[in-house]
Image (cartoon, rainbow, N blue to C red):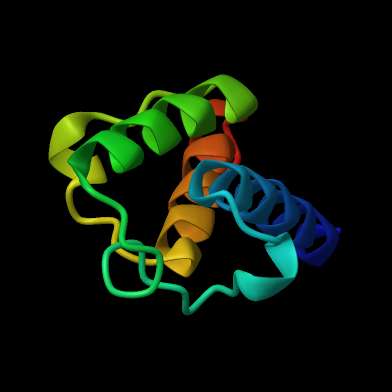
Amino acid sequence: MADERSQEIERRVIALVAKQAGTSDVEITRATHFRDDLNFDSLDFIELTIAIEIEFDISVPDTEAEHLQTVGEVVDYAAERLKVSAGEE
């Protein structure tokens, strides 16, 4: 069950990243780096962070967002925040 949820979170994050990057989601993997691979600037990442917050109904404080550099880190962060909000810690 947790694996299915993780895969769903990953799929949704990748779709958001692809939309923000203006690329196909098949080009995005967990290892994709926002700055190095997608040339995201700070505004791109802020817009992605807002999209993540809306998509998953979570809050991503700036102090935590600045440490998220790859798609996989965002997937893991979203999964952890969803566990906390669901009381599954």
